[in-house]
Length: 535
Image (cartoon, rainbow, N blue to C red; front, side, top):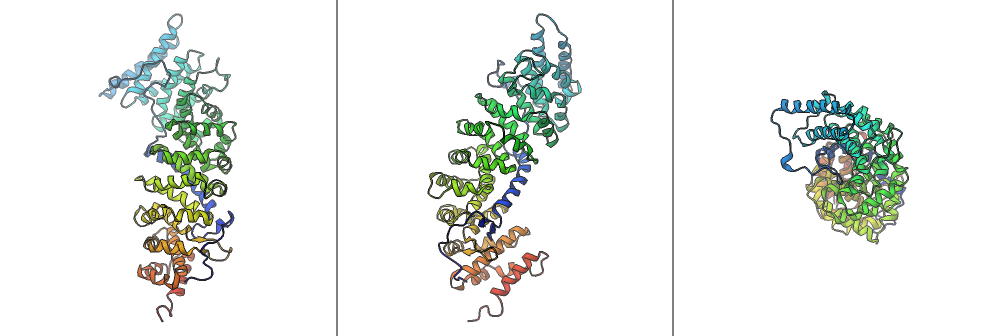
């Protein structure tokens, strides 16, 4: 029932108080744990969805002298044995060409490299295993180590790129090649090389390294120990769009964790944050997509990185990208990166998303767009971002409550998939409360609570209470407590009873979870005891 503890327009909450919300009990601490867990899982999501962790290079890099591959050039060999035999022959020719001397030797080396590369890039199923068994990798390492033409280096790196795109053991076969691949990334003249590599060669080597890094934590650790991080970061500064894009993709594979050491090292490299800003400002959506994934991992794994990111121009650029684009491949990392910084640093909500600022209105509009999307990931992530903004000041709550977001969130609570319903519930719950003292229940924003209940949200929260997931059940129970305590004229218990809320609470009467059992039994006793229904 309503009491003096239910102000209609409570004062803004401080960032420290935000940790004591009854609905979102630990905005930043819980969010940090979630960011780390998601960072580990994102690689799998990218492979299963839109962005593969490893990529076969089938066409020449932009700026290469090699002619484009026509559709009719695709090697189709129905006999696996025939393709393997051709591959073994190509590797044998590769070995013979190494000893070539004199006029035409360089041309011969490039031709045999190109023959193997075409088998590895133009076959429907690249004969990677056959190439490895024939001894291709140590030969390709020798071709990389020569101070020869960029054309030769490019072909050798291309072959290694596609071998690295194979199965885990096939990728691991590249271990002997990693020092030279890293050396050819450029940035300075390596002692392993006689000259500085071209951007084209560096880009192809970055692609190979990205494939290796995408395979697993052990290979990432090896690459980091061999110094791959710094030259990849420098390559992301390249004025050549495809080189910057490939470097960003390789970096996102290299820093994906779970160890935050690489992320903290990357954010400390001079110029990295400026490169992120510059590339997000460009019109190239493919480049922005890869850079946004770098932001995702930086913000998922490092508090230091979050602090620097939110104080740069990156959040504003993410919001503008989110609002302007309809490209799903771009929207997913942009939204997730934005969610990480909103959840990870109170400065983002308190000092950037100020109510009345244009950027705040853009953020809300873009999040509502994502809530309405047909894509499950966008709906879930947008709900999560809004739940953390809703844990801000009363002005932030009012802004969301009076927007088109609220009816959409209620619809999601009642009709969406389970994980989306849970995030929507957090947002709606946060819209209804502001913190009181550390040992006191939260103050209720009566106007918000009444409107959200009258709009049909109560059944959705009661369904969460029936969930086997304790966090979801606790969320549903917390909202029922708000409804019974805060709905005017003591009508809250009647509304809960009407939706079979008593039965949902009584399932916890003998539950093994002490907190849930005591809370549910206490609410039933308090609101549905001996005097309930007696006039």
